[in-house]
Image 1 (cartoon, rainbow, N blue to C red):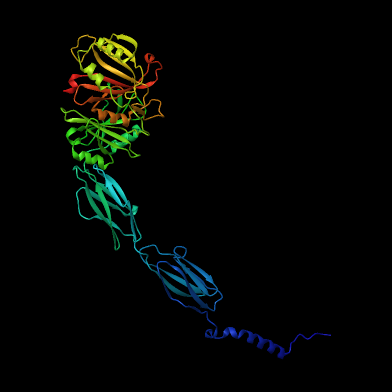
Image 2: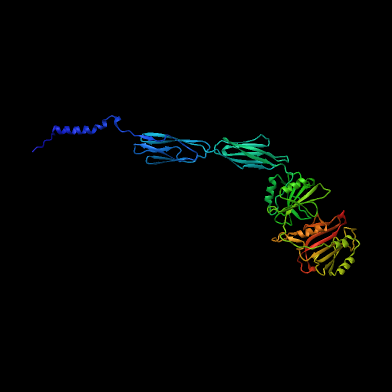
Length: 528
């Protein structure tokens, strides 16, 4: 049976109509297709300086939308949740307003939100708040910080000794001050400006030094001393060798101070640390009331010492110094000596009297002989120990005596008499007494050790013994016995001199331990 491949015409027309029906919508006019929509509930936002979160409602028929801003990640962030855009704005620390545009897009369409944030309050900071220069002048820097971005520093008035150089890129201004050759200090105010802000900056400069103070010498290193002195314009003085009398050595400087041209940091016996400072000064300037006021303004208290000359003390923990002014009436210069101040920690009883009567009887009276001394000691009941004769520059005889008992008023343990070539009288050999040493049982009767932790003790006169000297009419001559620097005291205006010192109870006084001694002598010229 043969198949018939021809389709009925009705079937063909039905298929054609279905195809046309399917194709018909794509051929409809474009205006009849649904368009993408995008609307925002805000077109502009104004934020205060503190910032915060702001929301924008987004309406769109598009499946997705997005937001973007050039400031995102800098001072704001954007967050999309459903149909809400959250804008988180950081605080504005700048002194100017800032703006940005936020673009929200959906499909081919976009909308803009203009955002403006207010400026922060204008600020102007600088460091340091004021500058102080020494008389030599110099160069210093003021660091400036402003949130406005534009600033300037100018003097309140033009002066020749001040120069300013602004360096905005480095946020600083350089201040240069010339040397002040006058004694008076000078001050000028600078004015820092930024926007509507102005702030003062004080610049002061010290006058030329009328007087100077040393760096506290205790424990100071060579480097610290040199840096300190060179910083104020001093130069190292050429080395002049050792002082044979006191065996001092140290560093000397020529200063820029007219009244105090030389300063020396010194020590004795080649110790590691510096012990004292000596300043060569003009006597008239140093003995003035102005110098006294200068010292007191720096914490040094004036006191009337045994000599009646100027002395000062600074007992602050940081300084602890004693100052002594040594001078002669026939010289225009004087020596100011700064030494460490040693404080007595406890009361230390001393003798009630001094044997001034013995000194006047046997030293001042030039008619007395060795026999007179021997008779006196025998009458006193003293124990004779030994007689010695020394041959040297001066032929000398010594008599050693031990006291029969320790008198509670005098506390003397023994006496040593010196006879012989009396250079203070006629220069001829004789056996007349010219010096007497009183030996005591220990050191506490006159001295305390200022440096108990050191190998070498620092013997300092006790307050009680100094009070006794003052009460008995003795004054400090300002002179010392080398190399130990024992002070020499004078009885009123006579030739009787007294030297408190520390010695040893040697083999003639049994045990050789340290003890206090009083050296008595008479020099007629000293009373003139």
